[in-house]
Structures are given as C-alpha cells and as structure tokens.
Length: 282
Image 1 (cartoon, rainbow, N blue to C red):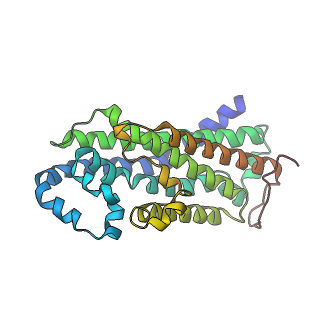
Image 2: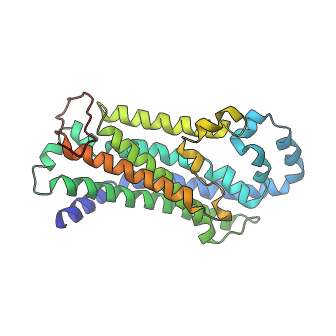
Image 3: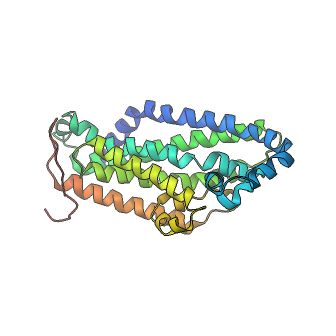
C-alpha cells in the first residue's frame, strides 16, 4: 500500500503542468462563454426565426429539434458550452490515457521503474488513480470558470451545485476515453496508434451523435457512440442510468488494461508490434 501512495503522489505531482495546461483553458472558455448569453437574451426575437429557418443538417450541430433551447438560459449553457466539452476532454483522454504507461515504456524508462520494489500493481493503479484525480481537477477548474462566467452575466442565475451536475456526466465520458486509450496502448504497436484511434473514436462519435438528430438512419449507429449518453441538459436533472453505464464501461476498460499490463513483457525503447494480452491466464 505504501508503494501505491508513493506512485500516486509522484504521478500526480508530475502531471501538474498537464492538468493546468488543460484546466486553465477550460476555465477561460466558461468565463468567456457564459456572459455572451446577455446578447442572446437581448436579441431573442430576431434570433428565433433564424434558428427555425436553419437547414436540418446545420441545426443538428446546435441541438437538432431542441435548437431553440439555445435561447433559454439552461439551453444556452447546455448547447453552447457543454456540448463541446466532452470532445475537448475526450482528446485529453486520448493523449493522457495512451501515455500513462506506454510513454515511459517507449522511452525505455518503465523497465527501470519496475526494477524497484513497487511492483506492477502499485505502478498501474497508482498512476490510474492520479490520472483520475487530475481529471477531477481539470473539470473542477472548468466548473469554477463557468460559475464565474455566470456571475458576470446579467441574464444568468444558476447556483454552483446546479452547474456541477453536467460535469458528473463530463467526468464519466472522459474517464471512458482515458481508459479506452489506456487499454488500446496495451495492445497496439505504439502510443501514437492508441491515441490516434481513440481520437478518431471521439470525433466520429461526436459527428455521428450530432448528425443522428437530423438523419434517422444514423440513430442505430449512434447508440454505439459514448457521446450519445452524455447529458448536456443535466442541469434539469441528472439521469443516473447512462452515468453509471459510462462509468461501468470505463471500469471494464481499466480491467482489460490491467490484465494487459500484468500479463505481457515490457517493451523496450523502439520495440513495436501488436500485443494480445487481455487474458487472465498467463
């Protein structure tokens, strides 16, 4: 247990600049986006017929049939801010998850780390826990920026607790992409391949989920997209079923990644090739 905490504290400290590098821009996005609702509220009568006249394809990227909710306070925050946050943090998950172990492995550092008495379990779970806390800090900075932006806006009045509800769904989606990238990095030839594959899944999922609002034929395919289960309108109430579904899927990917890390040899720097380690049997 002492080794776990040592790895956890070191990993969290080492990731501080990454956390700030993603968290501060997220804070600024919320700080800047929320006050613009004052302009929307002032021009509601002019904007409503424009939104109604939009092409269904274009409208699908601003909420589809619910696009007019953009003119309401909660709808504006949901469609103008939260609709894009999972994409941003999904790309963070692709980079951070794929590099949690594979980055040191490809640099030839991980085998030296494991030469110490910490053990694979402490290294894996300690780093994963540190990444989870880092993700919470990034989301916390985003929440703080949005709350400050709401305070600056004359037409918005949300308590901080209500603003925090969608971030629970943000965490679940982001955790899924982090663990997916981690699992792929244990199987694919390189960290870059795992990060690119996860990034493609993030962007493709966002596009498919958005277009499914205008193209009925994509609804079946959209069911396989994690973005479909993200709750942009959670300020009206958080649905726990999709939330726990995303978290359960993230847990499954974590277990797959653990079996992969536990059961295979550590690659030395420059060593590539596919690995198929997701089996509890050695």
